[in-house]
Every structure is written in C-alpha cells, then in structure tokens.
Length: 233
Length: 276
Image (cartoon, rainbow over all chains, first blue to last red; front, side, top):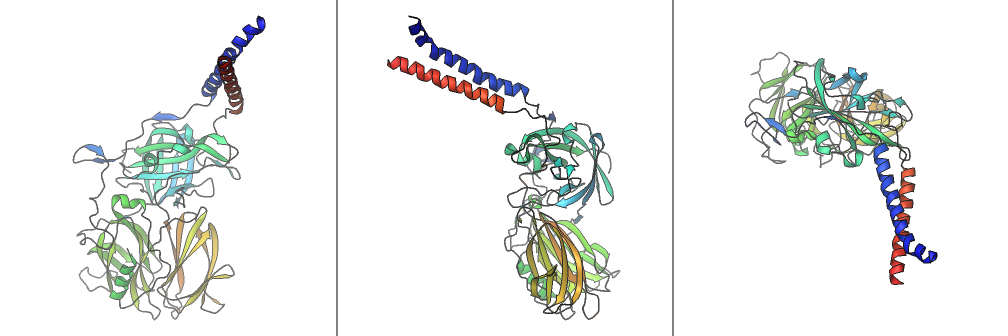
C-alpha cells in the first residue's frame, strides 16, 4: 500500500522539485548578476534636415549621381575642408587625459586600437571634430592583460552631463555626454555606434561588463555618446 | 580616383607613370556616406615653393618641398588642379596642371614630384584602402624622385627590387617599426635612410622617395591613411581589471541542470505509469 502510494507520487514530486530548481536558479542568476549600464538617451540616427525639420537618414550632400568613371562636372567652388585630426581626449569626470592616434579597420571589421593601452584611437575613416555631420569615433582600452589599466578604465562611470574635450589641429572641441550604454558584443548596434549618417556626435567606445577569462575578452562594449556642447570651439 | 586618372594626370605633364600593385577594388570608406573624397597633397620638387589651386580656388598657399598637406575632404567630382609658383597671380600660367576626377569615398594622394629625368610632374595615386589582416598594416613605397631604379630594404632584407620613378609597391607588414633603407638598384650603399617608419595596425603608411639624386636632395616623407571599411566591432580590453564583479554562472547552471534532470525523470516516470 505504501509502496503503491510512493509509485504514484514520485514522478510528480520530481517534476515539482525539478521545476523549482530550474526556475529558481534562473531567477537567482538574474537577480545576482551585475546591473547593466544605461543612462540618458542615445541621439537618434539620421541627419537633422534644416529644410524640413525632420530627422531622417539624409545624405549630407545630394546623392552622387555619377558612378565610377563618369565624373560630374567640376564644382564651381569646391568645399575643401582640412581634416582636423584629434590629438588628445579629456574627460575630467573620470580622469581621462590621453593622447589620440589615428586608426583604421582590420579584416573582419574590427576597429584597430593603439597597442599602448594609455593611448586612444580615432577612427580616421569617420568624422573629425567640428565636422557638421557624422560621428567622431574614439576607442580605447579598458585595460590590457600585459600592460595594465587602459585610458578608458572608468568609462562606465561617465554620466550624462559630463564634459568631454577633444583637441584637434590646435583647436578645442567640447562635447557633453548624453548617454551611456553597455552592449553585449554579440549584439552591438553597429549603426548607432559607428554610423556616420548622424548629426554631429562623439562616440567613445571601450570594453566592460563581465570578463571571460577563457577568451581573455570582456563580454560587453561600453559606449558613451556625446554631442557638441554648443559653446564655440 | 581610378588608375586611368593617374595616366590622365601624368600625360598632362608629358610623362606616363606606371603603378604596380595598386588594387583596382578600393574599399569604400565611411566618407562615401557623405559623398566626400579624401585627398592628400605631397610636395616633392626641391626649391620650388608653390600655391595649389582646385577649380581656380587656392587650397594651399606657400606649399614647400617635403611638405605633406591634408588629408583634405572635398565633394566627389572632377577637379582641375593647378600648381603655380608661390605668390603668382591666380590667372597666371600654371607650372603644372591636371584634371583629377575624384569619387565618393575614395582616398587619393596627388604628388607634385620629379620624373626620373628631373621633369616636374603631377601624379595621382589611389590609396589602397582594402583591409589588412588583424594586427597588420600596409607599407607602400612610392618612388617619385629624379633618380634611377632603386631597391628598398627593411632591416637587412631586400623587400622591393628595381622600383623605378613613378612606380609604387605595397607590402603587408605586421604593426611595428620598420627600419627602411633605399639603395640604387643592385647596389648596397644607401642613398636614403635608414629611416624608421612606423607601421600601424589598420593603417596604410606611405613612404615617398622625393627630390633629386643629382641635386643631392633625395629624402623621404610619409603619410598615413586608414584601411578598411566601416567598423563593426571593437575589442578594447584583455585583462579582467575593471570588469563588473563577475557572478559565477556555474552554481546556478548546476542547480538548473539538476532541476531539468528531475523534470525529465518525473516525466519519464509519469509516462511509464500511464503505459503500465
């Protein structure tokens, strides 16, 4: 009789205990894992169109009608702009005062980062400070396993309102942080972070979040978005 | 700027330049999005300060030998480039003139230089912006000097042989510093260098041999430009320092797995009971 009653109940008991353990462990992990980093509002994609007042993806210049090999007629007054190459980044709120070096993109799409973790890289294929549209992309190490703390060790502590200064071609360009985000690298919103079809912005990228000791890399990118502060450079 | 423009520019000055190793498929850089091209201008003619005009507008003033100007961004289109002696009237006859079509997103360099025989020439080079491998840069040597064919050494190894004036050659090089030396082809004495050339991952480094061997003005100038298209990732840390406090996953995973095992056992037990 007791044996029979046990036979009736053990699968049900196993199911209940199993559900409790599985659900409980998931909830337990969720509540004890570190919080994400999300402050402020990321400026929208698209270039502000003064003509229509609308925010949309608009080319800064009329779409090039010509294709390779069929040059357009000469521009009467060429708008030649000297690229202002950033040389130094300052974010006083988190103690950043670091040299900036131009950098490019490697096969596979990874932005190259200066080998010395105390240097910041500027994507030379993107916008430069003072350009009316586009994103100035700066990237720096949180740290290096070999060389120690990086210039952007504390990027995750930056907050909306913090001042960012970029020195370029003897001029000072001021920005205000408007948002901070942590993105899983596997789900990086590439257009928001690196896209150039945007109103003038500064995007500072580093790493952060949990550290995967098996790969030697962080799981997240920490991204600070800033906009020109409005003060004359 | 395609290869044909190189010919167009050079023909203007009566000199047919040849380029070796210029990639035909130039990766489109981010500036393509805004319809701009990126142009750098190199001055390689000794003792000749000049003003440079684009479509009649002076873009460089008092531009001197050994100077690298730019990068400049300008809308895609066709440009008449005029080079006049510094301080000359804008309407005066240019020393050099060429028509340069530039396309959106391309990266090009215009060099005012000397041919092997010492004739001033305007030469346009398309800068190969295709991505290099991880950790690599690209080293490009351009011989734009009044000098015979040369060999180029990196350290003690000869990496380029018989490069003639007007030609270029590309090398994929790991990031670091290259000690570069130029000799006349087949000889061992350096006519230029050794000079330390920085090679940066993700960047193209161009070394220009400029000046005149006969005039003892041979020298080198360098230019760097970004490789690759738009970035899609950034790997900016390799040590755990600065990480969020890690919540170990395995205890939760173990408990969860035990739970799932119990669920499975219970389900199997239930099914057996029903069959029985």
